[in-house]
Length: 270
Image (cartoon, rainbow, N blue to C red; front, side, top):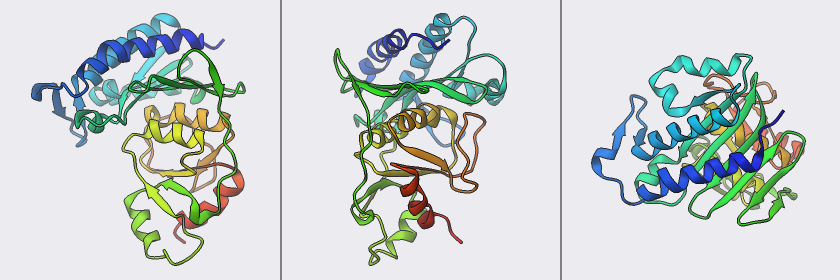
């Protein structure tokens, strides 16, 4: 049985209101520190994950949690995704560096998974107070106030009018081929995967390519994008993503399976 989506959304919103927004553009130096991975973590990340973990596990007492900061301290925690219990996969503050630099492109990401399969997902934009959510087989939705609005991706423009998110390596390689009409017209990186997934699900972004996949970044977004009509798969073997340990495989998301195959031809180096 899936958790109550409204209840989970309220837990996420309350966490952002109490633990994240009060520190936005007000972080002190001692509230920002470096991780061994080279990333940074703030007091907002830590406090938000603690609250989310506690409140979400209370909402489903049979569940366990896999949070980004907990895994940073104890990498074995990610193995819970392969167990028999439902798992809350939590990114308490996606886009931490944006947040620390006072940029408003950040999000809270929560997925509800069982044996690697994402059953429900939520991405919350705290600044704009907008929740994006989906449940497997039940569609994807956006709520900016009181009414849920369905998300449905339309057909993308021709490829040289597309906007997508790609790595610098692929960006540099494709720029050399810029004269070709088969090259996407604009390539961006938000430094906040959650907000990229919401824009993919709105049709603002037409595709995205990712490597070094972490479950807290992708589990919720892939489901929301799929339930909105999008298509994603690994470029290496064309299989679907499942929430699991960090992998170096590459994931490509597009508006449709047809567009995915067209774009894959650009990103896979033969």
